[in-house]
Length: 505
Ligand SMILES: Nc1ncnc2c1ncn2[C@@H]1O[C@H](COP(=O)(O)OP(=O)(O)OP(=O)(O)O)[C@@H](O)[C@H]1O
Image (cartoon, rainbow, N blue to C red; front, side, top):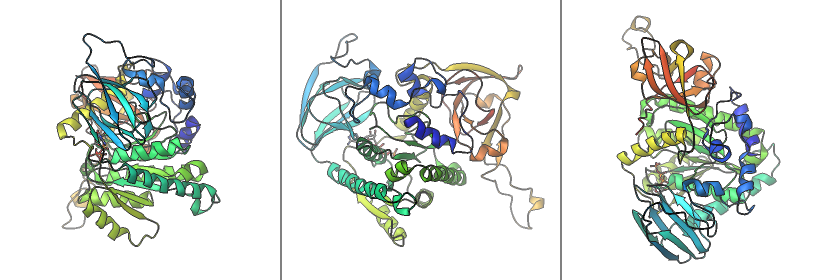
């Protein structure tokens, strides 16, 4: 079903994915093979999952992902060298254990007794879970639990004041709306489930709340669509992109959003200020494709969507928020931890009777991440794309002639020569102009998006198939060397360039 849903998404976009260029290759390879297979050999996610699940319950984790960092389902992972001491932490009901994993080593823990969840996804009982270095998360329990864990975290503490009850109440309201939508005639407006947009400043817990709402909905059998408009970090794929993906299973806290073929548009920068017009155009394009997808799929229409946004909320950031609310026709705006933003949105949206603006408390557990941390998280995300979360993928290095590739960037250059403009008018850069890029050494280390476009005039409105990373430019021989997730010909010769770079460390 996953496969079917995602295929519909892709097929309804302008340029369908028919080429064996795996995007993103990560989940397919991790679960199916150590190498990058063609999409035709990829199994639908749920088939693989049910084969490895500890039970067939919707909420359980994929055992392979549990073992991604070397754990075993039945006992503590074998220690390499000296192993840190273990400790047990007892959690009272409605409390949470907040953890920041050590910067240099992973953390192993398990649920010894009781029940607990990580950002909306239930923990499997007794299985050892392995969390990568630097991960920040919380284990919350509604009824009480005991956690056994290594005593080597950067920080861990128990908090009994959390906003989880208000969050789960929001989920209950959304659940009611989904049920009403499902019961309504499929050609009526009432058949559209909630369209939730989560807004707030940086580090207010937007991504985390989005995950919880999605995981709780998936646990109850819905397949909501996750839309990520945050180009800063990239929850679905690389930073610099906006993307959407249906969510059928509660989200694995370590592996992240389960993906086969998300719908992804490349903006190319981690801040919208570089080209706000392009950002708006891509948001609109994504919304239109989803609209078509909902029209043909009553199930995902009733489940609705959860939209995560950027933490940029002033000036241009605020305009872009309003644009996203409008473009996706959001019906619920959840404002995290900002009184001012909430009252501004309430004021401006009061004329729309079908939009609820709800202020929610920011969790005290949300960790602030400075720009250095964010930059290194972006870099880590790119590494994961090519090599996998635990180095389990095998990207391919390929060489192409300069002539085989057409690289473009969007924006820049004069719109028209001054002589063609009215007297006194200044030539301005056209933000939507497609500019061919000359291949030279400046392209070294850039991450380029591979467009699905077949013709040049489709590039601006096309979603992307994946990414390549430029590792060498040989000017005398006119050859370009790049790393791609899979071997073979690229799905299109049209490549998009932004300011996304990566240096392998
Ligand atoms: N209750 C919690 N306990 C521990 N860590 C948490 C908790 N809630 C969120 N975090 C962590 O805090 C960090 C910031 O949270 P999150 O990414 O949800 O914020 P955001 O508002 O989406 O950030 P951005 O500024 O990127 O938009 C993340 O690493 C997340 O895992």
